[in-house]
Image 1: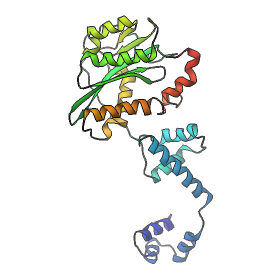
Image 2 (image 1 turned 45 degrees about the vertical axis):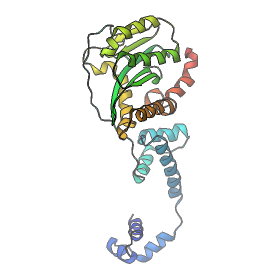
Image 3 (image 1 turned 90 degrees about the vertical axis):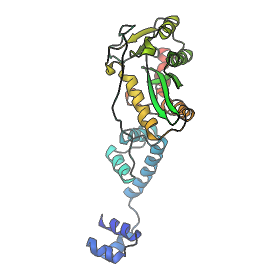
Image 4 (image 1 turned 135 degrees about the horizontal axis):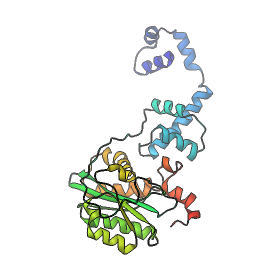
Length: 291
């Protein structure tokens, strides 16, 4: 609206009469407009914008329009349209973070059959776990993170951080998952790629000793472990790539806090009814006898 532009120009030091002449509006009309009380719609927009800004800050600046909209509807029971949320986020100059794809992998021969075949579905906790490793640099050197994800709820149930890529990295993540979930023997599939840590004798021995069923994707097929690729893409996007890290300890602390204080208990996940992994298990897992 031209009157609003006049107001913005006046705030920048441009004389009102000059601004009105340039924008071809009447000076009297501008002052009449400025003296009106805000409309009910403008008041409602201001109140909604305040909630949008709060939600965006709560998400650590990661939520875009879809998740802000769902947080308003599902988390706060606010009735509004998605286009309205998009408009107000644009006005507030807020946006989410967006993924950049890329990746890697030099696979080793499989030591387990592929029991998953890209069907990342589970009807209860502890039916199917997926695991992988990612890395990120600091000024001290690289940090490596292994994680174990329960496909049922997308919850990270085990993780480990180290400055090396030895088999202990993935074994420690597996041990955390076992300690937290205590799955019965012979019922849980643990699916990975063919990285040397997962094809090692030590990791295979730990699987067998715990009664876990090993599974591996095909050579060079990133989609065969797509769910872990997706999780690490989110971690990279929402945390790792957003700043430079000075020390390994600093990065390790940030990863711990992101997983345990944000991703598991609070971050809404589109694949599980737009609730967090912890909330999904709370809502649905009791009927399935979840840990």
